[in-house]
Amino acid sequence: MSKERIRYTKPSITGKEEGYAIDAACNGWGDRCYEYISRFEEAFKAHLGVKHAIATSSCTGALHMGLSALGISPGDEVIMADTNWIAIAAPIVHLGAKPVFVDILPDTWCIDPELAAAAITPRTRAIVAVHLYGNLCDMCRLSDIGKRHGIPIVEDAAEAIGSVYHGKRAGSLGVFGAFSFHGSKTITTGEGGMFVTDNPDVYEHVLTLSNHGRARGQTKQFWADMVGFKYKMSNIQAAIGCGQMERVEELLIRKREILRYYRERLEILPGVRMNPEPARTVNGAWMPTVVFHPDTGVTRERLQSAFAAENIDARVFFHPLSGLPMFEARPQNLHAWDIPGRAMNLPSYHDMGFGDLDRVIAVLGGIVHLPHGR
Image (cartoon, rainbow, N blue to C red; front, side):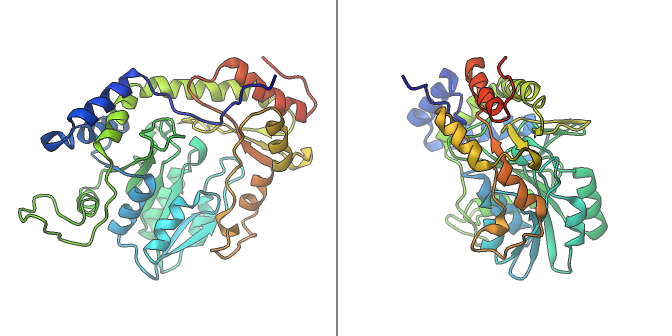
């Protein structure tokens, strides 16, 4: 008999989320059409400790509007790590600007601040700090660089709900932050995102952009004050988000338990490293990830084959964006080009049992020919 498939991720949905969604579907119209959206924004602001939040249809949309509000335009440059999903590069390109890819640090897999500083030119308009897999960028160094050069630091915290840097939650440290609520994330609305900021001017600009360019307080019906976007979250999606936010601590605790379980059993294997957690940080543990030392000879393809044989989903480490056909190759970004070939994301979801975790651990233990299990 074949073993039951272990997915790499799936959401945790309870009767709480179902009840809110049903209420939104049945009653969330007319005067109540924004009720759950407002509740979700308020809950997220309170959790993150920020002044402003705007629920969006995706993290990509939040980034697009935020970068637009910063005035990113044709001919500008935006610096970011080469190791990323294309969702952050795409809005930069859509605005006519150029993403400038720099290498990552070998331990956190996040942007190297010194290389980011070295890449600054007179055309640089922003640096994007992407907190990869729950790992945190070095925000102190990036903030210092931004202040020295007068360049805003933007946070892509799509994968970092629950991550904390020096007492502040990821997404609350830059000029603005953006979050994802895709079905694979710790907090989900199916699809969806959130724009957050403490800057009132940026907030008002994005709020206007998010409503087809209609400014708050505009009294003329169907009057647009600028060309905007349609990146709104639906009331039904926000209803699910309200239920998720009421369970946010439960969901985050479980994700961290899973990462800790993996780490205690895998980092004893020779040549294996996992998501780091430097002093004064908390890793939100969205995506537990193993990286093998080059000397082990373990490859991405070997890992994929071993997991497939055991009916386990395994997600590859992000390819370098500069390796994609639409961008200029930058193989000099050595870590970004090398690490994906010897790394893998591991299954991690709220109701994943210890038996399933042990199955994943056993595959990795077998690859390095060492004992495994609980």
